[in-house]
Length: 160
Image (tube, rainbow, N blue to C red):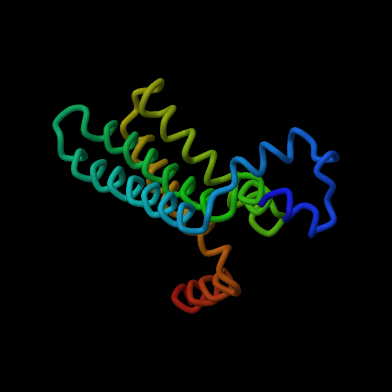
């Protein structure tokens, strides 16, 4: 059946490269993509909720919160890879309109983990988690047309 599709689309079966065979073998159906997206996003939300619950654990609570909250955000961002594919996701993340938001978001993710594991500074971990939230929110609304302009306008009206 695949050979028939290639012949009908104008592609010769002998001219197919090894890369196209790999791409054909790794494509997912729309249903599988949706299941992967939902599962990965649910894991991300559960990690974030678990991190929030672990915030109240004595001594190590803030560090556990920072780690689980960051892992939850990474899983939530990673869930969109199932919808778009990894290369399209990376291309859209680093488009000029959302480049600064992406860099700040990734930097906050890394700095949160650094402050939790290497620097052992709970205050910095909490600050970076808060910055992580705002950076991820700003990054997320960049995918909604005119949402950034609406947020800027609302903020300017509220502040003046």
